[in-house]
Length: 192
Image (cartoon, rainbow, N blue to C red; front, side, top):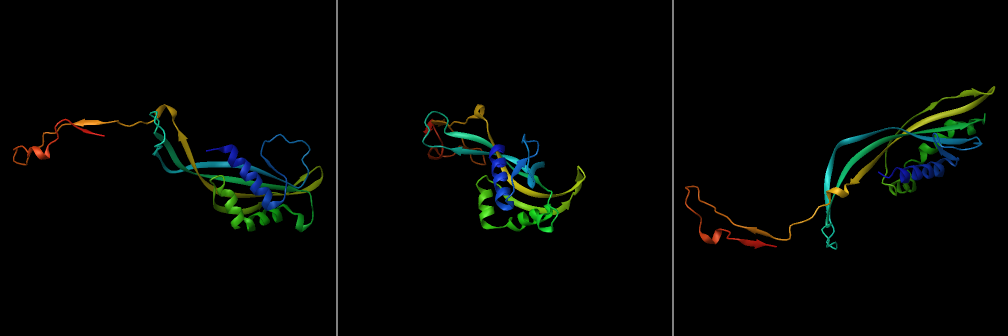
């Protein structure tokens, strides 16, 4: 998985839906102005069993025509947090997250997520986490959004190849043990 692409896409996606400056949890940012949003991947898991896929590039003629990749479905949870010091209902953190939730299924939102091979799975309830900071109430709310994606990994040490030709000989027999006719036997035949 290309986590950099996923993170960049999710940051821009959240910004487009909320209109808020959006940062990743732990990102070094100076003088953050309120309101703002913070994103964090809280959990990720595999879904099912990974599989090996082989792809063929007929244009390659150097023994690297066949490559093997591991593919696996992944689910992960993105925690979206909004913090604001606005005391009005319209400026509350919950309001920003509801704005994001209503935009989740917009065709433009889903299309943007697909650019990073992301699919929306579900959104969870908005949780109010209001707190006091320096004797002032801050409106804080969290919402978890679950996504699916595909992880792939190519092992360059396991580059595949092919057989240029095969030579085969057979000695097939009938059920009673007698040999099959020569026309049904292979006698040092080459197969391209």
